Amino acid sequence: MSAPIYLFETRALDGRLLRLADYAGKVMLLVNVASKCGYTPQYDGLESLWNDCGEQGLVVIGFPCNQFGRQEPGTSEEIAEFCQTKYGVTFPLSERIDVNGKDAHPLYRYLTSAIAGAKGDPEIPWNFSKFLVDREGKVVGRFVPGDPPAMLRPRIEELLAR
Image: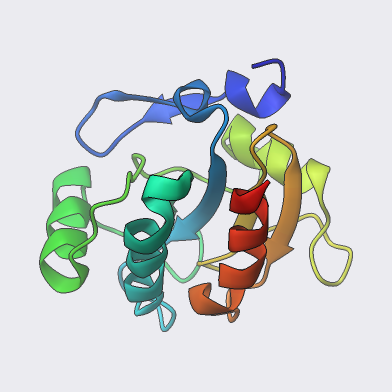
C-alpha cells in the first residue's frame, strides 16, 4: 500500500469516510460527476462497468463537482437521491468536491499532476473526466468527458487480468 494514491480520503455522500487505501489492490476508475450535465447519462455506463467488473476487482468512484456550469448544485442527500432513482447508481460517491483551482481536493491535484490531459493541460476540462488506476496504485489513463465508459472496458479488462 505504498502508492501515494492510497493516502487520499474524503467523505462519502452519506458522511462515512471514503479512503482510497480501502481499495488497494483493485483497479480504480475515478470520475468527476454532475447531475445536470449533458454527460450525466454516462452514469449508466459507469454502473454497468461496476456491475460487470466489480467482482474481478474494479471499483468505480464518482466525485460530484459543481465547478462546471453549476451542474451539481444539490446537497449530498439530493445527489444521492438523483443518482439512485434516475440511474440506479450503487458504486461509491464522494461528497461534492472541487477538482480545479485553489480549493481542488488533494486527490485531484495528485491525479492531474500524475497524467496530463489530452491537450497537455493538467486542469480538468469538464464533468465526467475519467482517471484509471492500476492494481498497484499507478495512474495509467486519463480520458476526456466525451469518452463513454464502454470505451474504457478493454483497457479495464486488460488491467484486471494482470
